Length: 457
Image 1 (cartoon, rainbow, N blue to C red):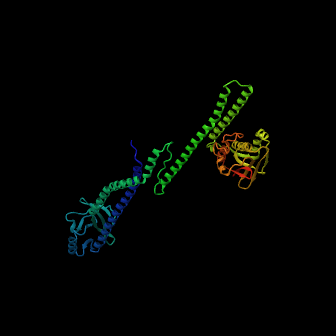
Image 2 (image 1 turned 45 degrees about the vertical axis):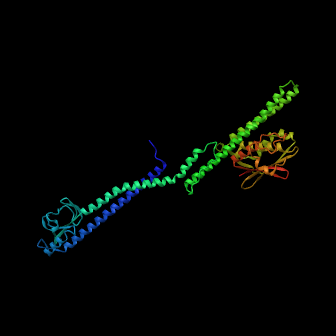
Image 3 (image 1 turned 120 degrees about the vertical axis):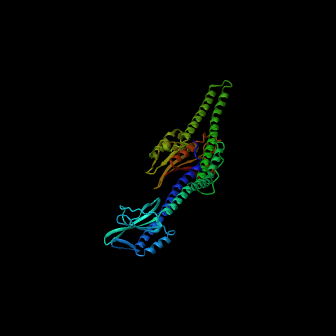
């Protein structure tokens, strides 16, 4: 079955609510008109009853009109003006006198009906409102005065009103539905724009953006949100393309070196020493390749892993001393010493495994870029808000305009330096893990030292 369009659903829901409201209004109008008509009729009957009570007298159990001729003449004159019917009956309901406008008709007497109460009755086939007023001589009821008014006019008015409402109700709803559909169509034009623009957006074409509506309403917010999402997607795709390109280049380089070395090696027979030298070189390149692959896998693994963090109480001093002990060989080869100073309270809430990777990379980086026979300083400072860990080493100074780039993937300050091997991924891994752990990391140079600050909040 074909589904309603969005604008039709909006119009339908609007009409459904409006239909209930209009029905309630029509019902209230009809009830008020009916109440007003009945109230007027009831007042007229009571007024007629009081007026005619003053025109009669009871003598010896008989009801007599004070001025019978004048009364009848007045009733005749009022036939076409007043719909009131007057009739007198005895205590058994037998007719005594009636107004001329009744002609051959006669009002019915209802002995079981309460006196002085208005009720609906019939005069032949005509609906009337009627009241039966008892007539007393002393305390004895000797008869009744029946006063009635035709309800034909009231029934006609209410009937016509009901017919008008019955015809007007669906017509009003139809007109309102068309109007609501028109305005709903105009209101959702931005949605059609979103649909049309989205149909042209692909992974190879992420430059398009949703036009923003003039009114800053929910649709404006939706369009802004979608544009922000497209911005993030475009940036993510660009980063992925750049990462893939850089990774391919970095992986291709050691493979090309290994292939070239082996091709040179097999061109002619060589001495065992030459074979050993070239094989050792290829092994070092393979080790470099393995390191690069491990780091790439590490980056991919921790792309967004907040839900798998294992947060515990961590002693920073213990982890850093353990990382220093693992770097003993590198420190001895360059004759570098490490001096540490930790505050009494160096406990943070974090992930032990990820912190170990961060400190291993930072200490390895400090050793790699330090001058021989220098000292690496690792200090911690504590205040009521945070713990600041500072790692300082003396080495080649990083230009200030390159400090903001050192955390980018595959970026190296001096890639042509043959003495320093690297992949350009270590600090990017550190930055990603720091973001994951909500740790601020800052790189700067002070005098002849490179300084990394880790701020644990």
